[in-house]
Image (cartoon, rainbow, N blue to C red; front, side, top):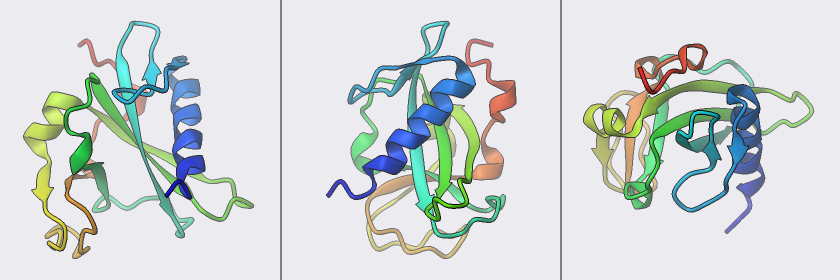
Length: 139
């Protein structure tokens, strides 16, 4: 219902700054990097202000699987805005993501962390993502 849009926009700004990209804000992708890569940023808000653990998941909602992007970048943002904490958890090319991630239907429990998913989605553990410091999707 739009209550979390601010977190998504903040995640996009963080990633655009990190990769020196331009905000595109389309349905299919959020950022175009200097090499023309189309990046979709997936942001999760969290009440925890601790660094993400390796077993946490990077998620793409089931309704977003047809987006025409080249790669996903995953961000977590602490909802305590006084703390001003956010983490870029990593990135993965779209094709690799769907070859690696596990599909869950609403109500199923993610075997990696015991979380009951509230919507159809695809999950991959954060420790399976590529580090953004090594961001070279054309390699």
